[in-house]
Figure 1 (cartoon, rainbow, N blue to C red):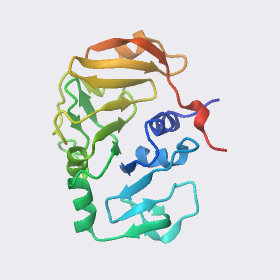
Figure 2 (spheres, one colour):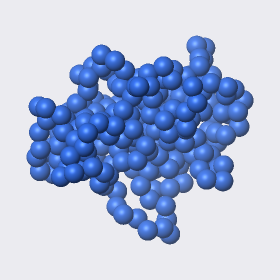
Figure 3 (cartoon, one colour):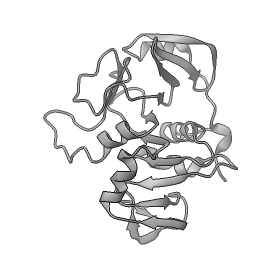
Length: 223
């Protein structure tokens, strides 16, 4: 099955969700994760602009509701709508099991930079700093390199940080990389990709897992 980079990343990230998780999906690529949840896994999606029970983008949307990225969204039966105070009380109170965000840079210490490029117009950090500090697990879903091929996984972030030592897992179209106290561990490779290719496009040293395997996720696409 042929899939584009963003779809492959979203499918693989979806496998990290456990039944009953409360999950926040960041704007952009992370919102696609809701479309690829495995059968039998039900999660409660939190939107920082004020509701829980966000429906998948692939479903029927309500034109009067938008997610945190301003996209038309839906709310499932049993969902709830509230103000920003309660929304961020949920985040800061440690009630999120997982948050999935995009990234501009991640480094070997698990630091994340995802909100600002100096010299370019900045819309604001949004809730990213709160999300990475408050969620139990932080997954960065991003393409492996920037436009032009520059590595986005570095020894040390060069852009302003969103959070220090917060990243649990990095999922790109090439690989799945886990952050550990010993460094970044390459755990899975996308179909047709070699460890040497991933190492060549990564500016931080990678430890190779003894159980290095082909990336999971292609099998969970919904019809």
